[in-house]
Length: 118
Image (cartoon, rainbow, N blue to C red; front, side, top):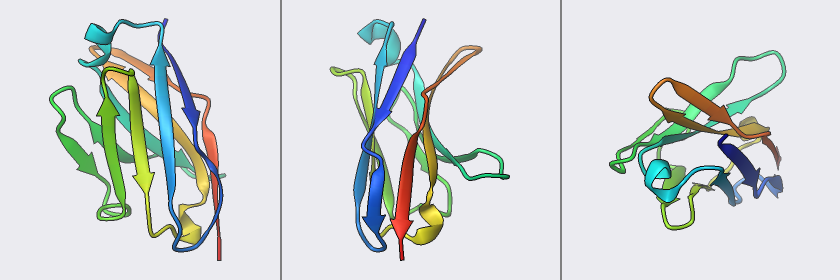
């Protein structure tokens, strides 16, 4: 069973930066590198929003709301993906979730809180 553990959330002032990490366990490196990895966020009363995704072939895509401010990368040797967030805004405040997708399966982390103060 694949397990995802997010870290790196916290409190930051507007304009600041944070780097979130998502470490995958319970899978081999050869499987991990095939996984499409994504970051979502959710605020109370709203649907979970896809922010960024990186495929096994390292193709990245971003939501318009974070394009140019967030950068997603992966280190297949460490079974880890990173979301570098800069120029953070109060509206970026949310719980951030890591997602792994392969074939018909989806896996989720427990989420990490990001709070951006104005």
